[in-house]
Length: 160
Ligand code: NI
Image 1 (tube, rainbow, N blue to C red):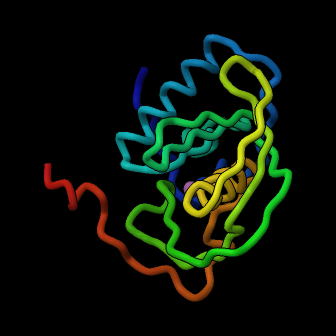
Image 2 (image 1 turned 60 degrees about the vertical axis):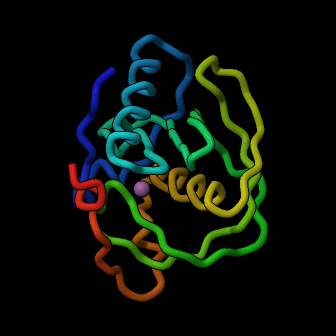
């Protein structure tokens, strides 16, 4: 596995619609492993393939409950509302206030291309919506209420 370079907002690859994954290949498995490693290295809770320059419908998420891999995710249902701070590894050091559904139900495929359904609330629902948006070329800043604001970078917090 290897770290991949995270694309920063302004890179047009972040504005493109990603293609569905049709079959699992060793190369795609490697990509997923690299995405997880890259997300953990950057202290993120989610990462979408276009953020590492690959236009495939693949998302990885870990809200602190273990890694989730979502391939070709589809949001089936949403309900409720939550308003809170959101950031993105493609826009380091900044955050904004975004309203998202408080509950989502999705269908996706796992790394063995087996279909599954998953329900998430609160942070998981927010992460799923945020990452699925990336697959359609949408950055969270499009949903931000008010202005973006500066937040302390993760590197500074850990003081390595
Ligand atoms: Ni993001």
